[in-house]
Length: 297
Image 1 (cartoon, rainbow, N blue to C red):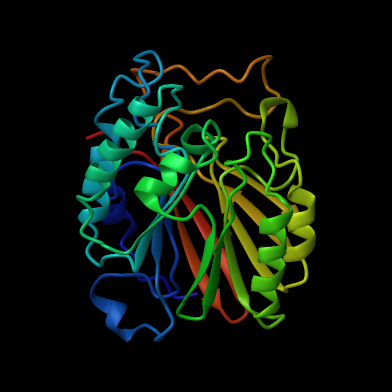
Image 2: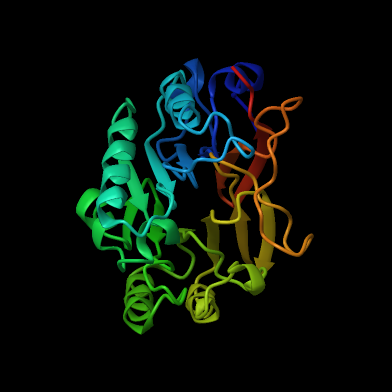
């Protein structure tokens, strides 16, 4: 596979956060030579704006700004940017919830790329069934097409019971029915669709039904957040890839009694935070992932 990305330069400028880059030709000066359907996008996840915990992240108000600056510094802008949930940290105060959403929306507005997609996490949506999120960021589930790839954003967080729900599952089935069996499908969720570790809320109660629907198509890949760490899993032919988060890392599933955030290590700042490069090969369909560490500025 031809690789046109200058990894050292990208590592220096890409900033923080679970970023996903998709594109067969890469970027930089050779991007013009790419196939017409080559592209890449950036994924950021689990911003948790409003979180206060210096023991977990003493840069809680600066990390997102660094990530936005990193994306803006890319030589070739991504086709779009997607935020896969937990834009804000949970609060029972509806006024504070909206204030945090307004603040994070303003910061995200600093992106030079104006095609930005959003989906909620349970911190954004579970206490009011996504009402405030929709006021600031729009629909909680939707689909769109981009250069030969069909993207689907599923909402498995607005229901406080971690369910997608029968109505949305019916919508998903109808949406995929309009796609050829061999269509390239990329799915965004917040929670994992499979039972990763239900004891820690790392599952979707009716996720198996969504997977059953997705398995009617040949080329499906799922990107999600929620667990604040790299994780890879397969259900049948479907690959599931978890993204690292922007605010704090979480322990490996079941590795300790409680799901408490990993403590900040001053000797290794931003340990457990990171971003990822994903290169897409259109034929045969393949996604090559490269996990890159966060570089402290």
